Image (tube, rainbow, N blue to C red; front, side, top):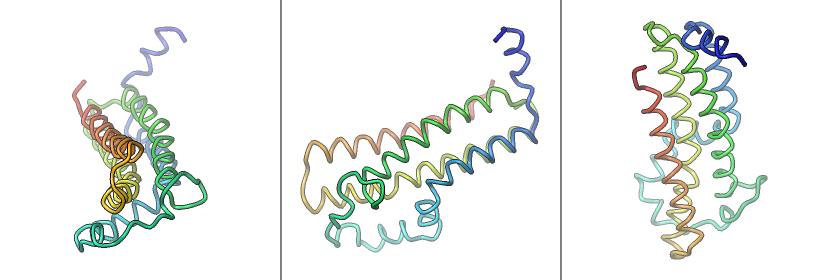
Length: 169
């Protein structure tokens, strides 16, 4: 691409196209984040933690391992990775191309950024809770510690991206 074309796009997308592109992006992430996001919004995840069941119930071994057709820790970490790797760069590109000097575009982009961040963090809620329960019930192993580190890094990475996307240009 020529430099003139690229510089011609930067900061040119208005609020309507920003809304459309970010809605498509949020729809893409929603495909994987639907169940975890609904469980957070419905109060199932917070209720599970606040009731004490996280530490009183024994870890269900059905969640151990990596099977994409089962509710496993590995499955949700995989989908979080796929959705983060595809959506965050796309959102950065939309933010670069959007005319965020206008309030309407900033609001649309801010809402999309918040929704996308919520979806991705919701996808981490289940594997995080299962890993905590796994460690609590059966002790530490290097793989479980790696899983906890991955969840922490993923969560901090999403939060850092959301904060980075807020910055003024």
